Amino acid sequence: MSPAMLAFLLMGFNASMSALDTVFVRLVSDEIHPLQIAFFRNLFSLIAILFILKKAQRNFDAKGMWPIHTVRAVIKLAALVAYFMAITMLPIALVTAMAFTMPLFVTLGSMVLLREGVGLHRVIAIAAGLVGMLIILQPPGIEFGVGIALALASAIGLAGVALLMKVSSGRDDPLRIVWFNLVITVPIAALIAIPVWVWPSPAALGLMALQGVGGLIAQLCFARAMKLADASLVISVDFIRLPIAAVLGYFLFSESIELTVLAGGTVIFAGVVYSAFWEGRRAKNKIPPDASDIL
Image (cartoon, rainbow, N blue to C red):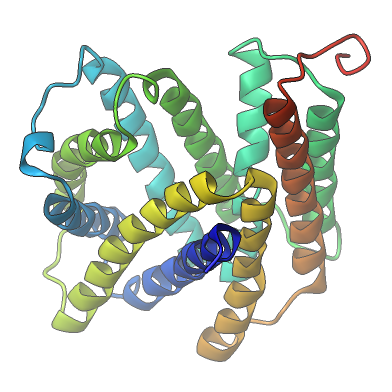
């Protein structure tokens, strides 16, 4: 099997798992509060990573990066809870479409906070994201409310996590960064889940176990796929999670398939792929930004 084909299969699993993530949350949300779902998702991810890490990797030497790991873990937990709450309020296809805005917020944050070059392709990608959101939210589309605000807050929070990852990724192994994140997140998630705590049924516990383990494996698949093929090609596969989410929502929860959501999600994702293509081309050819590409 060629590296490109393997990368597509890995990203296909990642995209499918992302769509199933919304289904798992919706299935258990009548019984378990999103705060508690976030705890169990991270707990089972932590248990899974213990079996993946070598014994020598299971240490707490963060190389002076504990403050950054802590801030990133808190932001990621808040974003995850916001995402889960949005799933309980909105059709899962809509939440999935809004999640596609995360890479665009990363691009915007890189430009504003990290002072990276404002390439024309980045401006086009951000513009595509705004147009896509307008398509989704336009009358008589989806009315802006708490659910939409939570979905956007989740995308912005995860973008912040990605930006912080840039700070620490060069100083430690990505798998250990995930380890530090989970070690911090699980006890915090347990504390904030206490006020809403109920003991889950075996069925709910099983679904959350699948969610936690599957989510961790999906992260590893994504990381591996990015090493095997160009980012623009790999990321394009991620789009399949929108139609998968729409179909699952239709058959499992009788949610209507809104054309505005599919169209808006397509426009947003097109901007992400376009930006990834140009970023990959620049890195591959080692092309520095110049006056023709900087606004």
